[in-house]
Length: 191
Image 1 (spheres, rainbow, N blue to C red):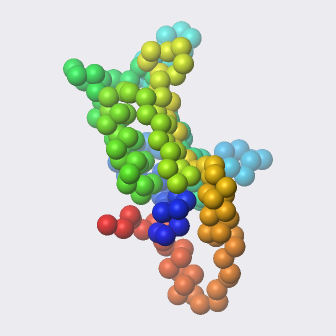
Image 2 (cartoon, one colour):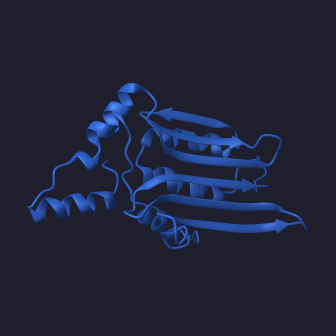
Image 3 (cartoon, helix red, strand yellow):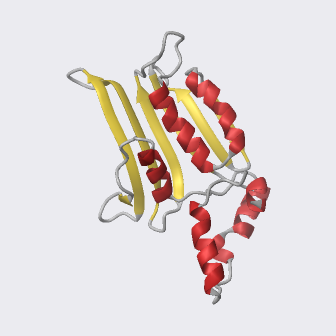
């Protein structure tokens, strides 16, 4: 928890993020290798609601990308021609996807971005080496891109990332510590 105050870390694994979305009724694929020769792992959801002969006119796409150990690299989404209510707000079923992603990331200050997403307004938010972007696609009135990820930008963030990196941790022979460290990724956010 102290590390995330200086530099954010994912507090959820890729398989758990995919499971949380699946548990909310979003038909995410299983967490698996992106291709046979690739070490990237992912799960995704795609739904095309309406299309013409050439392309989708209304669709939702979500992808959680990571690595073979389950670490999340980033989460991306694209919505085309999103359904809205009478006030122009994003349909609750699609907004729910973003609510789950933000909740599972455990970065509570990012919850403020959900109002902009609901109202289909551009929002770009960066804190402690993490970023969230929900923007209207250039040249399109009705296409939106979403990205949530980590990016150490300043020298102090790069130093903090290196300092708190699990690769620098010493191995333990105490199985109680190994078990508690292994389950910390699946734990919910501290209240």
